Image (tube, rainbow, N blue to C red; front, side, top):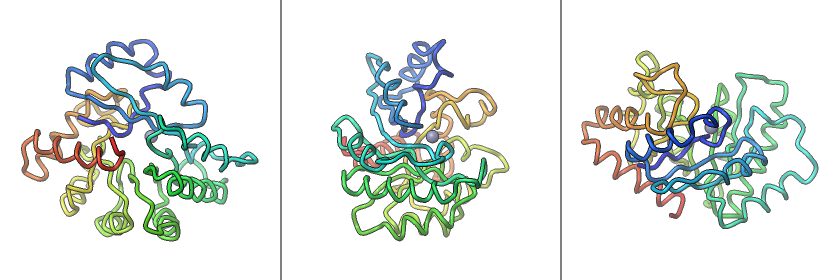
Length: 252
Ligand SMILES: [Zn+2]
């Protein structure tokens, strides 16, 4: 299984990282894609290794961490993302839940990530919290046929999901699809499985029955099983389909 979104490099895993990775491998995790929080994330990502898991770095600036963009930000992002060992641009996006103080800067940062993703031909990783219409508007404005990516932890309506897919964006399906009153399961059922990839967003958003605990890649099995139940497919069919979509998107 490919975990397309995991912050496994964060301090939350420092104490027991080896055990976490062993459990991930036992659960069948073979690849982990790591979205950045900021440029320092890549230093932490380099420390990861495991005999049966491959790790892939991404580079970007999380919208909740956007304040004033430093001079030359876009050039720096472009230089980082041009490296062959960087597989995606992000995570970026919009977050109006934590603060609306820096909306203009968040939008500016998202535009910069879009331009870099197109120029480097790498997928963009989109975070969205209480900002869906602005997010889709910017993706629509930036889409010139060269933008691909993932709406990570998809949390939109059926119409928003369809619109994102029409705009070349895939849907990252994480733990919230297992939540009882979330409604994400009903939305996902109406959308095409071949545009979906699996993710954890570890250490956040643990799936049921681990809800409220620190999330880790091995828990992705619960999310995969939920998707199998929703589409009435076997677990291995779901894994095969979502893996193949992820491999195409990240060109691995
Ligand atoms: Zn994330």
